[in-house]
Image 1 (cartoon, rainbow, N blue to C red):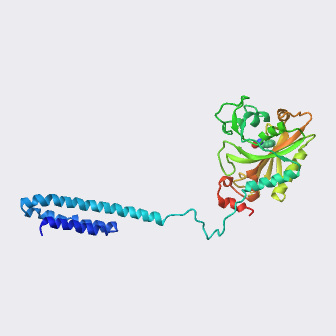
Image 2: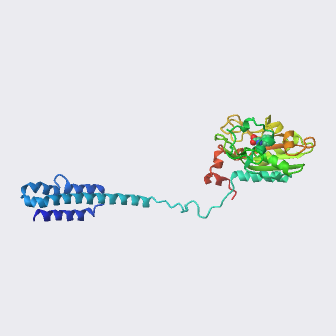
Image 3: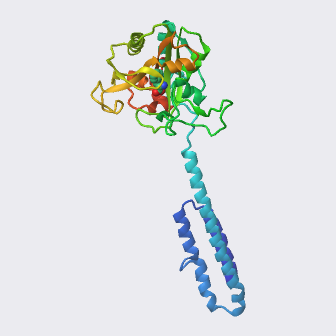
Length: 355
Ligand code: PHE
């Protein structure tokens, strides 16, 4: 057989073999058998020196062409093998996220209430039964409702950029800048303006502080404001309502202590602490190792605040409190990190569901 037809035969042999290869190593072996040191094509090239110049002129370029074709066939087979390996992996490892895990849920799951909602509803019931109304207010406020009307002067540290999220926006028609409310006490102002004394209301809602997060601090958390305005309201009225609240929530005697506390909008002002229910007072990350948790700032409404709300402080007085709902949830359920509450993790949330 002459060299030309031999080369053609070699090429068609390679074409036949390469199409059956399905492993990269086999492919490399096959290629070596044709193009390697003593491969079939190489052998032919070696023989070129023994043939006449006319034949060599024909065989030489053809041998190179066959060599290139074999190299090309090898590359495309390799690319094909790599692609099918990836396709196989993708189809083997495909996860159908819409598929329910039958071992866990043999019927659709019910939604449930977040523990904070559960506590909020409980507290609302307690206060409704004591003649309080429930009020609401906007999250975006201005510095009048959040600070000025609450007797917080312009240089108070609570106004520091660290604490407050301000809006970079034109002030409103009264020249007041906008902010995200830092407390629900804004609703004290709105309540006083909307109502005629005597009145009593609570106002639950989320508030915002530009603070670092840790086990007991979140930038967005929930407060429940309370206010009672009437004639001759005293600190003992305040203590009575707070005790009512705590016994109902914890369904047991909770140890409390009152410390003087400063808030520009109350005078006198107090901090009501409860004995930490996570560690029973021995010290943990929630109570910052002191055994007590600050739960409830409160006090007698400052006369300036009554005045800003259009109420005559010579005729009326009252108390106000701001309960941190997240802390209360943590105490009630023994949760040691406030960040769980915002996590949206169903494994966490579903533990409190009443269904
Ligand atoms: N608004 C205060 C705060 O967020 C709490 C508070 C409310 C204190 C009512 C006294 C009376 O820190």
